[in-house]
Structures are given as C-alpha cells and as structure tokens.
Length: 325
Image 1: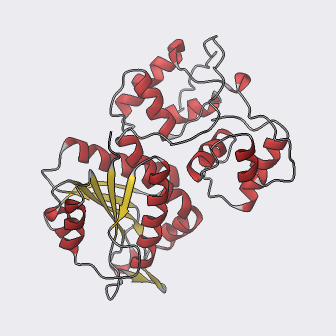
Image 2: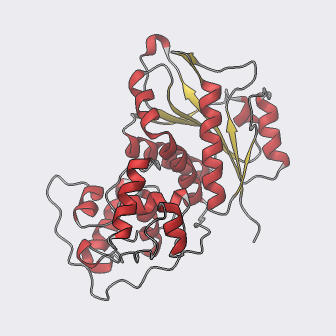
C-alpha cells in the first residue's frame, strides 16, 4: 500500500512575517513546528511534505495547489493567532463549513489534544469560507492556530513544550490515518494473563486520572489503541467514547498492564553509552516519538528530549527499571 501523503504548510514566510509580537515572528515559529512535525510523521511511515522548508513567500492558493498536485491525503496549515490588546488565548482549528466528517473529527482531535496535553484554552473547531488555502484545497484540509503569539501565557506554554507540541501535531495525524511507528524495536513481552485488578474510580476522577491511578499509559495514542482493540473506531476522545472505554476497562477487558505487573527493558551491557545509543544497543526504537512514549510510561508527562529528562531515563535503564510503554 502506498504511503499516506500529508502536507504541512508553515504559514506566511519571506516578506510576509505573519503576526509579530515581542520581537517574535509567526513565520519563524510555524516553520519550526512544521519541520519538527514532519520529522515525526516520517517516523510513523508517512510521506510528510512541507509547502515551504525555508523563509520564502508562497501565495496562499499556490500552497493548496502544491498539495493538490501531489495527490496528498491531507493538508494542515500551521499558524499562530493574534488579537487586539493581546486579549485572546488558546488553540483553535478552522475548517470549511462543508468539510467531511473525517476532517471535522481530525480538527476536533487536534484541538482537544493540544489543549489537554499543554493546558491551552480550547477555543474549538470553527468554520469559515474566508481562507484561501482551505477554499483551494481539493483534499481534506484544516488551518491550525496553535496559540496566540501576543499572549505571554500562551507563548510561555509554547516555549516550554515546543518539541512536544510538534510531536502532538504528528501523532494526531498518525492516529487519524492509522499509522504506526516504523520500528525494529524488540516487541514487548506478553502481559500477564490475569486481568488487572483495577480500582473503582473516585467520585471526582476523570477517565485519564483513573488510568494514571491504575498505572496505565493515559496518552491519547494509547487510549486510541485501546479503543480500536475494543471496537471503538475513529476515537477522538469524546465523553461518550471515554465512558464506553472506561466501562470496558473496568470490566477486566483493558489489555493494559497495571503498575504491579509492568515489564521493563533489559539493562544494556555497556554503561558508558548515552540514552539513544543504549536503546539501540538493546534493539529498542530510539526515535523521538518512541522515547516520548517511554518517558510517559515512566512518569515524564511532557518529554522534550532535554538532558535532564534523558538522564533520568538512562539511569532507570541502567538499573533495569525502565518500564516499557
């Protein structure tokens, strides 16, 4: 089967800086996100392409035509928002009013995941006929406004999570198109045959909090995987889907391993290697996306590949206590 072609469009460029605030230009940040997200999408086996990969100006309608001519499966135009008096904040996604259900659900998932993972206000999916790139695209398309460049709180969140936000953009696309990591990693040993002894939820717990309390990976990617395993197709994280999945997991059908039954990676023989080389040495996928999943399974919620985070993971690995995701 041919690879999925996903076009990422870094908004603005060249003589068009986009929104500008506090010495920062939208065109620079959108290119940063598109490049990193494209890299992660290729790790999922997608044919990820950028409408621009440098500081050049491309007319809006030509950006869509580039994706049209490529026969792309999807086009996401990446932007940062701005508002009068720096009053606006949060993430939003724009689509056409006549967008397909697939596009609408993808837009909703993108908005929900970025908001949930990073604490940005969820401004929701919005409809417009006023964006040339959406009007010209003959394929599924959306315009993502990651956050507000002129809002100090939004930009502080972005700066703390820039690598993770780009990874999130890639993971949502991968989930919607059913892509899996291309990896030569050693497969996980089978989980214990006994169904997990899952606790009853506290009255005020959310589904995600309940998963975390029971030692489960609560990331969106894992919830989508569990949903597919239990016949919940096109998972977008709605309240109805979460409740259905929650009930299945509590009934002993979860397929997840509780903390008491976790499997761990073997410690590498050479203790002088860094994290990436150590993972390679034990034939485990060392790509950024997979390291992010390993990090979440070991209590690091927003992995960005920092030296401190890698050192923590490496120490656990050397001790034989690095849990498999």
